[in-house]
Length: 194
Ligand code: GAR
Image (tube, rainbow, N blue to C red):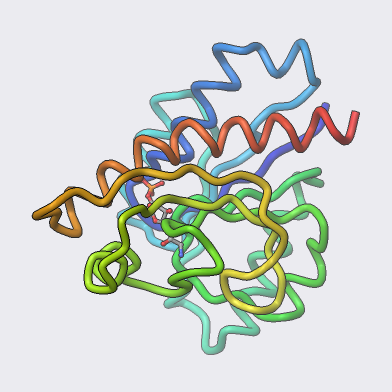
């Protein structure tokens, strides 16, 4: 069995979309792939309950219990590696990762970012797209490299920016597309590897 470990910090809707696709499309039987664990750095992340509802094992590793970024990432690697994952999926995992972490999972670490990369790396992507007068916005699934929100693009979705859009309205429009492209990109990763 090939294992996926999903890392979350918040609502976990992308995680849930991946789990739904895995279930609906029978990834376990067709690809030999399963979500082995969902790990949150926040004990109160709403996504933890969602993961439990969908029958996924959850773990919490609070970053606040660690003195440094290095110490947290080292502990996180140990947690993740218990599952010997083929793929580590960042799904709203709001932590900057150390180069050692990224190096350790080189080629098997992917992220979704709510912009059309390379535009708008970092935070507040939707407001920044509106402020810049962009006519389109979107989301990108990409390989994770040591540089924040860089790395080869695996999938993108484009949505219009509408007149009078608020950041929240645009974020919601983008998120519905994230839920389509992220499961597809995960599936494609394993189909390529097969
Ligand atoms: C998503 O919009 C994701 O693209 C974004 O956080 C949200 C998480 O939602 N990620 C980042 O901003 C990473 N830099 P979710 O917890 O419901 O999947």
